[in-house]
Length: 231
Image 1 (cartoon, rainbow, N blue to C red):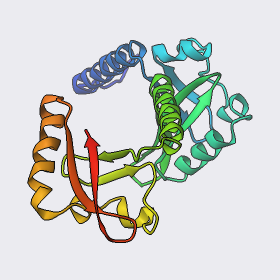
Image 2: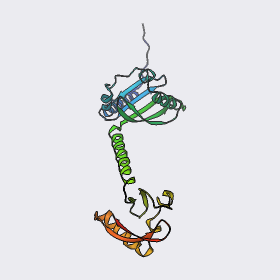
Image 3: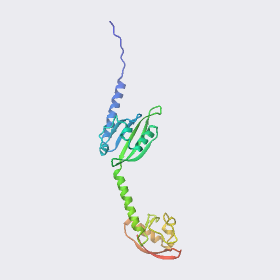
């Protein structure tokens, strides 16, 4: 009895498979230790990857939702469902979404095969909760400040380093906000005082030194008036 067979060299294939496995293991090590949340969703909407320390903030463990449908998990978040559908149709998506009190900046990137077909969606979520809280606090402070300044008897003005008016609590009768905001203070101050104003402005910005001076400028009826200013 004879036994026939053949032998082929598969060294390259074995090495390639080993390199791929090592690459995937390295990738999982990186994403699992990242503060970002990284996930993959296949064509059927099933999670095939879910990693990152940020998952703990919404009560999940790495890999916990693998095998779960995104349409079931986030059925109460239509913004997420729509973004997934759009990404599976080949369109890059990005939005901010709050999940269980945590605000995420999420990017959904479609992954294509060699034929141009979407095979999965790769997502990255970044926790921006603290940034959003800081932005909200800043906005609230600005609103309170504007409420105070708008009722103050003095005219309160904000200038940038070029002397452009970026905010004014109120304008004199005969003028409108549109005429003033976004324009240079030079439009309302006598030319011979422009240099004094710019020198004072530079001292405030560069040296944080308060400046007080008196300058002539246009009044409500176009007449020349004197104003005492403090920067």
